[in-house]
Amino acid sequence: MKTIKPINNKTKYDEWLSVWVASTDAQLSDDVNENTWKNLTDPNIPLFGFMAFDESGKSIGILHYALHLTSGAIEPAVYMQDLFVVEKFRRRGYARALMKEFLARGQNQQWDRAIWLVQSENEAADKFYQEFATKLEFDFYIHGIAMLKRLMN
Image (cartoon, rainbow, N blue to C red; front, side, top):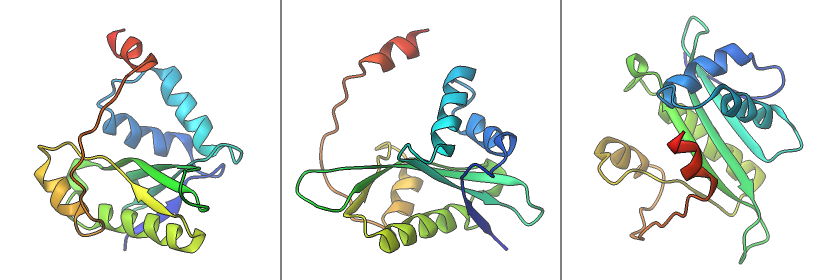
């Protein structure tokens, strides 16, 4: 049985951290990890998430998303920032369960739209996401501002 739970102030930091660190290839500093956790568990910050657990109760997946206002709609939009399942648990339906829970919450809370990015060469992810959404053909631009400094350290 796949268990999906929302991340909140009852979620255990260590359970989340083990999956988060794996998802980032341990490339982020402890300060960034701790700040991400603080934001995920602060009810006043519009950053949210879900965790997936295997049959034994071990954390094996995460999905993070940020709600934000948007022009052209009354309802908020949402940006899914992270979807990750530990490698040995992939292709067992955990990512699909996380996505279904995420999109069900969006339906329940009447979000205007959900968006996310996929690396163009990640064919498996591209095929997976096409089950849930329409792929648009846009070029994506980013100016890193503080991100460039962080990545160079």
